[in-house]
Amino acid sequence: MPTLHDATGPELTAAQLHDILRLRVDVFVVEQKAAYPELDGRDLLPDTRHLWFEGDSGVTSYLRVLLDPGGIRRIGRVVTAASARGQGLAARLMEAALTVPGEYVLDAQTYVQDFYARYGFVAEGAEYTDDDGIPHIRMRRLPG
Image (tube, rainbow, N blue to C red; front, side, top):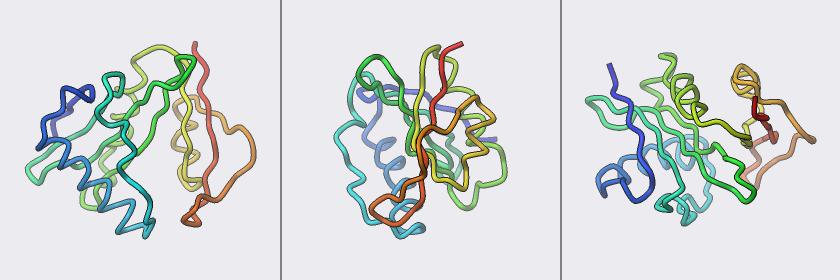
């Protein structure tokens, strides 16, 4: 059974950050063929929260929560290794992330919009395509 980890940016060890970045690049850059700047300077900020599962083979599922202006929390980089999909890990990460009360936003790939809707997220605005041609939709979850 994978172990759940929860750390702020400054609490991450170099090895943890490396393993997290490896999973994100493996899925978003290699598997999805989306060549984008993965390092955005927000991973080590003190108000960035990282949640991930780690098993014998390393980080298997991950997400981060950023604090945007106005106190809105932004969930992003939700990712699960191909070998760990179908085990409910992303669902467990979402449940853990949402334990902090408040308003949340995320930019979902449209094919997983229903997944986020299970947690009270509602689409706002029109679907858009990012620079890599992947369809997304902005979603929001209001406090309460």
